[in-house]
Image: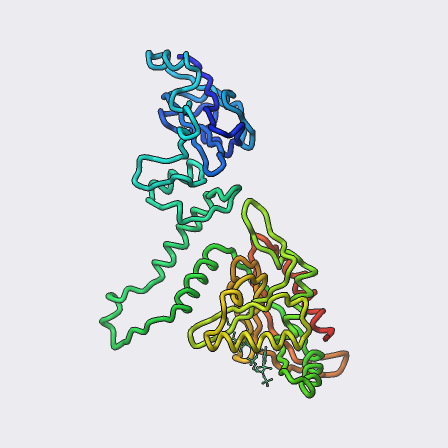
Length: 398
Ligand code: CAO
């Protein structure tokens, strides 16, 4: 048996590169072509495979290390064969010593799926190859958009669940009369987006009841003179913006690699029910608007949505959404997050209830609300604090 030092191959233009994955550990048995480490190049991951059958004696680097061409990264023990001896002289195994940057192959495989330019580690590639998944369809959430095992799992989960959730027409057609209706494009797209959100975001919903008696009194007064009709929703937008300013993570987007983008603008999406399906136009810079301006925006955007007049810019850039089913009733529902946002407030129907204040029964108007949030970004305790703040802001009135 003979020990061989494995060295970092020629990396092309790159001076040094980071080790993003170590695929083996000390004592592992290696077959020729098994990946040992994965290096990160500018555009893709680069697998450095073993050229021999053997045993890993030592790994002298760790994930995250920066390495240069010629640096030893592992020692392996191989049987002393003629083939091995000839390679030993060259120190760097031929297959890991490309002549130029063009020779540095991103991890690809002889399989029919082309992984060229894909940034993913060997484990992810192996599963993708086995299941014949095209990694180009997956957006990576890791460093430099690397596709992680979690991304792959989510992709597999979302594609299997969306396909398997369709009923089979053939198996249902013998039970009675029916007709087939074609869903509108908006509904179809909405269904896809909702499925993706539901399957990829760990949703938690926090329920609360808010006393809007003061706001309702103020609203009645303002509506006597206001040219624009104010509904409870306009007040909620103003108060939600205050809560988002106080708790910025609720106004963020999860951008991968453990980073959240805390957005310093407050664009509030409003779910609008239209004949064609649900649309969520966005009130831009809601923090700069007063209550009447917010109410005007809601009326204008809802009109446009119902008349198919919304432009792309009216539908993009949201940082938080509100879905109000208030006028339609219901005591509560769990709204689905509108990615890349991380939270959404669902509003149900307010009702008048008798409440004991001291020893007196008084009438209060209570609004049930539900906050769904992305548990990867927001904890239950954060949600509790956000809702307590929102509740006390609303209960103060404007
Ligand atoms: N509780 C009780 N009444 C409420 C209420 C609530 N939470 N919210 C509004 N109302 C009242 C309004 O005050 C108004 O009553 P008055 O005419 O007596 O003042 C009435 O209900 C109708 O309000 P509205 O619907 O015209 O206005 P809005 O600002 O509340 O909502 C809009 C505007 C565009 C959001 C709404 O029309 C809409 O489309 N909602 C549907 C949203 C939806 O489908 N969400 C579900 C998404 S998940 O599938």
